[in-house]
Length: 216
Image (cartoon, rainbow, N blue to C red; front, side, top):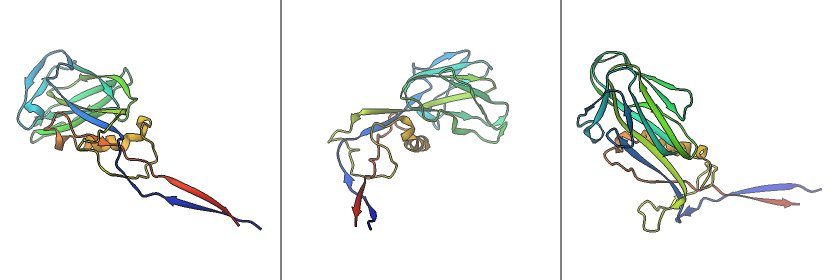
């Protein structure tokens, strides 16, 4: 009589060698990469990124950004008062995503996320924003890139010992594998927007599972 026994050895080791990384950077509303159509006014206060925003107060105004990356989010402000604010976001000619702000606010709100693309293919994209309301204040874009061929150098401050992770993906995996990292990046964008380029985020290494089959 024989039995097969499988022993799983979970390697909990630390790594300290180059891995690919995710980067994120902010594109201010005054950046020449952004193409505006319609009537836009230059505004801004200290609480906003680079102390600037761009205001469109006539429905039909557009702003577009072409970028290479795996995710983008759009942030803006909403001033106090009662008025209708509605905008649409079209990625690569796809169906529009609609954002509608609360119709009334007793105070100005900064750093509102108007749009988040979610994980995108790692290639070039074009996002077109159209304003259909009033007092639309565009502050900045938060773009995330992923380069599987760009290792962290030995002298890079972000080269750290990385504990093995059970996320189940290898360096250079498809963008859908890094959605958790992208979510983490965008959650921290407002607290770190004082810098135009945020710190790099190394990709976790996979958890290695070794199976041994013993027969008795």
